[in-house]
Image (tube, rainbow, N blue to C red):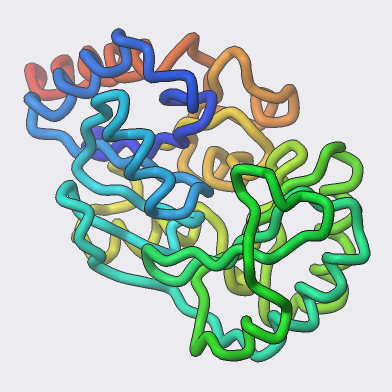
Amino acid sequence: MIRVIASDFDWTFGSWKGIPPENLRAVQRWREAGNVFCILTGREPQSAIDVLQQYGGQYDYLLASSGTVQMDQNNAILAEKRQHSGFLSEIAAYTLTLPVLNFRVFQGKERYRLYIPGHEDDQEAGTCVPADYDKLPYFNQFSLLFEKDEEAESYCQVLNDRYGSYIHALRNGHCVDVPPAGWSKTEGLRWFLKNLGVPEKQAVTIGDNYNDIDMVTAFSGYAVESGVPELKSAAHGVVKSVAELIDRLLEVNQREESSC
C-alpha cells in the first residue's frame, strides 16, 4: 500500500505559470485519506515556498534543493545535508569563463548569487564574487542556468570529473543542480523516509526530467506524459498528471484495505 507520494514540482505538479486545479484537488483528497504528499524539487527552499504559496499548493513536507533541505508544512527546516564550501570559489571562477546566465549557492533558506558581467539587469543578478563563497561554512546545493542543454551537459561532465569527490552535478534541461557527492533526489527521499519511519516500498515518485530518472527508477515511480523520453522509458508507468496518479493510488489502496 502506498502512503507517500514524492512529486517533482516544475512541469510535474506545477510551474512558475501555476498549479493545475485538478492537482490541487487531488492532493487534498490524498491527504484527507491519511496519506503524505511531498514536493521533492531541485528548487531552493525560498523559491519553492514562494511559488507554492502563490498558487495555493498544499503539502505535508517540502524536500528542496534536491532533498538536501527538508521542511515540514510550516516550512520549518527538519534536516539538512551539508557540504563544506572550501572549493566553491574555484568552481565559481571557472563558471565565469562560460556563457552562464546565473549561478546561485544555497545555504538553508539563504541564497548567494554570483555577479555575472553583462547580466546586471537580470532578475537573478547577483553581487557575490568568487572569493565570497570561501566565507560560507557550508552549502546544501548550488544551481545555475545556461542557454543551451548541451552547455549544461558539458558543464556537468567537467564538474563531476574534477570535483566528483565533493559534489554531484545533475542536469535538468539547460539548468544544473549541484548537491553534495553521492546525493540526488533519491538519496533525499530515502533519508526522509527513514526519519519518518516509513518503509521505502510505501512510497512512489513522479517527475518529468533527467534529474528525476534516478528517483523514478529507485521507487518504481511515474513520469508525466510531457516528460523527456528517457524518463518515460525508465518509469513504472506514464500518467497525464499528478491528479491521475493520485486517483489511481487511492483506488488501489481502497481495494487493498477492503481485502484485509
